[in-house]
Image (cartoon, rainbow, N blue to C red; front, side, top):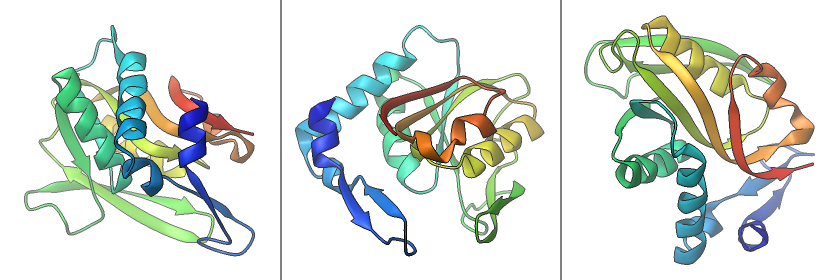
Length: 172
């Protein structure tokens, strides 16, 4: 795990002053680190009872699609509005600096279907919480939420207290 920490770079003052952004693109370009991250995430998901993985735009797609392939599961993309071609359902949510929205195909999840939501980083938890609400809005069940990185100091896990949260690397 220390190797993964070493390849994730910090970008100070991004996206705004005072924020230290955890940039995973350096991990993605390193084949052994990327493979290790997928192996660790997939190990955390083994033995769980779920039907598909939900990937959050955009970096969540990278991890969710790799995990879906490795684990033999389906992939459900959650995107920014206007990016999906069929009928969608939408959720809006608060950010620190405004609001945002996400969409999923209305028929992507069958009633009662169990999913794991995947993203690269758990920060404040607002986006992940919104996606969980979107899944439940169409009758799906959230088995867990999985993240490569969790920023403990932002308390995102608190916003997700109704769900099991799995993370590989945690930063205080």
